[in-house]
Length: 566
Image 1: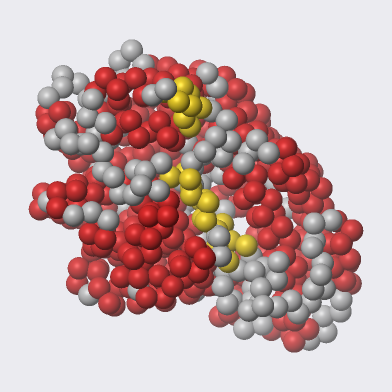
Image 2: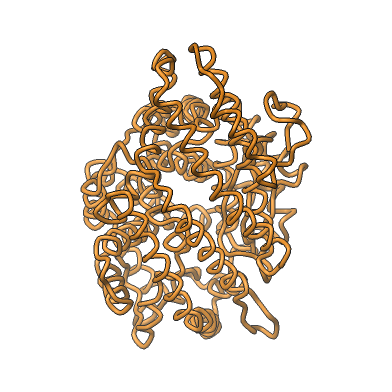
């Protein structure tokens, strides 16, 4: 729906663009239009961007409604209609317009400082387009929806009631070790009940992705993925260097942290259900009773960081741009998406009353502020940044909020919350390396079997994991990768979190020297959207685009020192 702040200039005001017969004439007109001057090209780009924004908004709306209630037949039908009837028809038309643009001599007259990133992207899209991949991509989208539907319906009977697996996580923070074990076993058994189905879905996804890659002339899906994700500024070898850096600089810190945890808990071995409980036997942190309280407290934190951020978050709340509670039928995980025509963000998550929910809302809030900051760019291509920097917006917001957790906690709970956040940074880097290395292996070994897949995952957990003991639960460990929804839905989207975490940690260090300048640089970088190459976006935020040992090691030392001070 058009936003009065960004009224339609090209599309008819009442067109909903939910039907192909309504969309197609616009593609016809754009393809037929003469481009006889640089002014013509510029106006054509604006009109094309307006059309793309409106179509994207229809897709976003269908996706949001489907994930908010995966067991609603009408929402599923609307989403599949978009996936099957709209997306496949748009792709060849978009390709034709991209070819028209790169072939137009007047396009070269556009200001290169403004259009260099855009031009690079369009040329890449033209190079990768293959019409025979369109039906394969439709099948891929349908399979990921099937994965979400199964995941959203997974519940268990525990504590005398039916609970989602997200709700079950609350018990992993209970001081009673037997309750924790029972909850972990119950959730793991439910997931194992779907392990074969998930293996089947992934096998089909893998085969589709391999065919898509080969159709473009790539030797494997990894080569294709690096191109389609426009990873112009780093290579697979750089990812391997990141894996090595994590193994050398972060894994020892994680294992030492686990050793201290095992000793503090007084247990012979650290089990998977021992990782979230308080080491001193205190009960779970209780940051909020309901999502209304969660929203109010996060609003205060955002206002403290910067008044405008708080106002933007309050606007999202008042307009209903949040769906936060966990419930049966809701897809797992959390995300922020943007309704591109009305240019407003939307946050989805599964809150159950944990400290992790606070971090998730602050994280997704960072993404939302990124959308607000870049929303005034007329080109849809520039209203979002590369994922490696988009995650700096969210992870950076988590660490900028670190200093304001007293809004939620006091006394020893405040210390616990701050410690938990920093311990989470230590824990997440080895997990990121595991997931990324796993995907590199998957897609460069196309003949692998499900058994080999599980064996390689276990070998990576031995390389990057902590000190937790899975004795007697070997199958649970081997299937642990199935919990990472990115592997199913967004292949090769994970190294971005590692790159961004290092950027976020640099912001956190910078704020100790000059808080005002750090937040100013952060917000100015967000305003650039995707209009600059990745290294320039990092530089604008006052941080380095580097994810080697030389950058990671001092950051880990700083986190360790901060933990010791707590």
